[in-house]
Picture 1 (cartoon, rainbow, N blue to C red):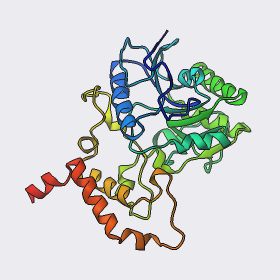
Picture 2 (cartoon, one colour):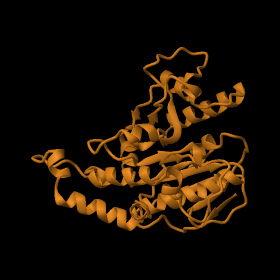
Picture 3 (cartoon, rainbow, N blue to C red):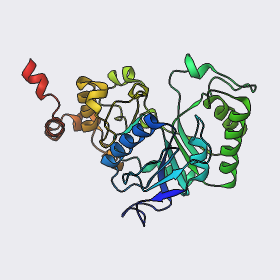
Length: 297
């Protein structure tokens, strides 16, 4: 069963490309509702569907599909049943900060795309399956996965789902790593800013580094006490100093919006221009950040 809220695809959006969220339970579904609103701030015309076990009306999604099977990993079903030729699957605890439609362009040339795990020496990254895979071929973080529909990718998703089910595995990323290693799929590794989990790493980024497009913040929940009718409050989640740092990275990032570096201008020359300072002040003023800090100083 599905509920459709837009009779036609969003104006300006590629009808063959779209995002999907997949959730079970009320809290994860509430998180997805905030997540889609954050996404729409960055990409108002994107096609976005939700797969869930909850009875829900929310026009922030273009369509809400009832899950056929309720378990803790509904993302495979969402990818398998997606109505899009090119799908980007997002976890509910991600904050899409900028237009990432270029990932759909990547999926015109590659079968799948995702971001490698950063913390490869702890936790989920150390879990393995029965197949030996070199350490230099790490797991792909499941918070953002792009798939182009084909017989090969359909088979990958089906095998991924069935192997996780049959093994009663609590984790799905080790199995996906094994399947990608054994496959002939053309897989593109996206830069870390498309699924950034480490705030400690961001703190050390300077303006020579591209600003994070997608933040993946597991601390959001559950439990989730935010308002699902509103987008995620970035400053409340990461703190004002980090939010301001992200804004400064935004202001200096010439690649946002598909831009490219001017041939005869170095990064330091462009970052020192008055326009950079004006942009940062505008961003701070628009966000309201920094005002409380100035008063408290």
